[in-house]
Length: 408
Image (cartoon, rainbow, N blue to C red; front, side, top):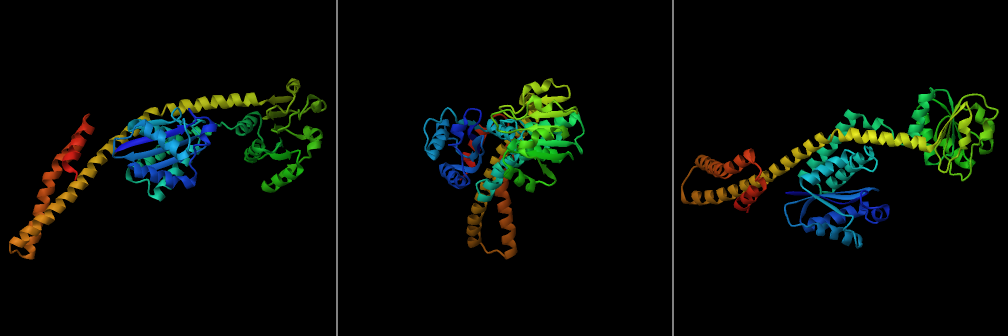
């Protein structure tokens, strides 16, 4: 058996290519069947916004890199994909699968999403009958290893999301419980700020230029107060924290808005272009952090995640080698199964001949039948089992000889 991983991902292919080379749910069956017809025994397709990769198993060592490029070009009716397609084989391919599932190959290192995506791809292929014994074992080992590493390293506790980091940073300044926090702008970032703030026990206020949208958000989340967009300035003095993330091309918060405010206010400007006048940072009682400050924390956290996962590289390599060794030994099991079938077939013919030529009782027939079958299987199986227990570096070469000798 030969283990392949091939496809394209964010390392070489930009979004303009990835969005064209993407397997929809309706493509999984068609693409898998094409590969089966080409000689692949098992197939798992993983297609996300950052990658379209295939893991496949075959007993035929006949596939060149050009075959895999042509497969993608023909399936998606595209030319010129050779510079984007990667092809990995056997241990290299297995190690790629394990590294990918553990988050080392992700655009955002250590992200949680890839584990779920690999699990979904596995379950889909399994339910459709394209993932069988060997790929199933590979995916299960990769998924379990990823879960163990995430649990052991606590890597998911190192935040990368800007809203999450902003709220965590706010908690470093003060306990947010019962503090008033205003979220200005309720797009994706604003919503994430709200969700993270809800876990802190703070009194949440929202303000958006579209009042209907504010009312809709208020219905989605409990205990949220609305401040009219036109009345932000007159309510700033009541706030302890402000998280601003609008799409406004103009400044939302200006220095003069704080001239009559004496209390301490922490402001997180998560907008680009900025919502807050940089001059606000010169006011003694106002602490202003802009998106660059938060992104710097995010980059440092990303580096932390990368270093943590890299420290598990030896474990990933070890598990990859364990699976590769198991996969090679499974090949011998297939030979043994063929041997058993051939022995039974030969025993049936032999017994049929003996029973026609002799006069035996039913008890005698059972004893002779059992003795002949055991003898045949022992003679045939012993050399193969000895090889399985003592194989070395010439495994593939010897396996080919055994296959020629023993397989039908």
